[in-house]
Length: 403
Ligand SMILES: Cc1ncc(COP(=O)(O)O)c(C=O)c1O
Image (cartoon, helix red, strand yellow):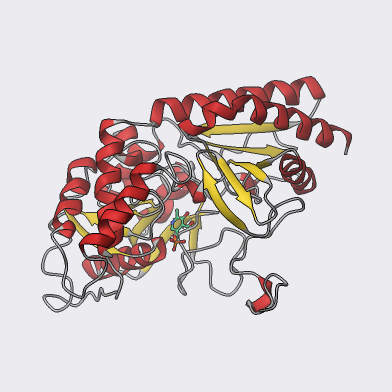
């Protein structure tokens, strides 16, 4: 067995996300806020499985649910009753979820949402937000700066109602697909009435409003952004945090849009060998019960607030121009700008300083998402290591100020 890492992986990696200096190439275990690499070094994880982990690594509830699920029936081609149980849980948590279809990845769910919207409206174009990310599908849903091989499609700026209104008034769009809190263009909260007005504009123009809650679902609240902001989309997609780190996704939406439309009752094709995998559903069911009965949201938001305020104060003290934006437990930083209300990609932010910050944070033992378009995800397990996180932040910002 060759021991040089990535020898047989194409380009040595399995993702478009770079490995920054001082980052571990492989991790072998984790507990709470910690990740341990293949050299035995421990790091505090501020990325938390792309936001999927609300209770930290190796949480006992998830581990027990996996064990229990394996004992029952780990896979079959006939669904288990868990598919009914979890669809009911989604219905009870998500205001738009009159009906549910399960898939495996976020990309599956957004692809299905777009396909359904095209069918029910008879229109083909999907309007989206500049810098929003909806997965790696081979159709124009991604322009997060990463994807160069597909047409980026029709985009408007997040938080910009004037261009949204003008685009929708053409009545050419099947749907407006939007992350209700932009999580792939830095962390960008919606302006106070943005989602309400987007809702109204979509209804006026017979365009479906699709909330891509792949990140925000179960991360901002147990009812996602739609519950937090009180705006009900026509359809929504969920994935990362449903099953606490196991692969599962869902398309949820209005009953009239999701009845008798899927093949063979209708023409909209939906299939997937592992769609609604019983093991992932078993974990999702236990995870959703816990998110409802022992919500991590206030504690996680409070830690994100502490970290954000600390970064703000230290940047001021050190004379670094930069901005921190936060929504709930999600936050991100950009250097060289004083705000990024339309997303970092709409600004001239300083990538060099960002890269230094990430590398210095890792050197100080804290792993954050390595791209300025991604967000840090906090969870209550970080409470025990908050002093180390704040110290690492000061050390890394000091290095940024000298660069
Ligand atoms: C908002 C959003 N939608 C969809 C996706 C695609 O999900 P997946 O990577 O599971 O296909 C992502 C992935 O990061 C995402 O952030």
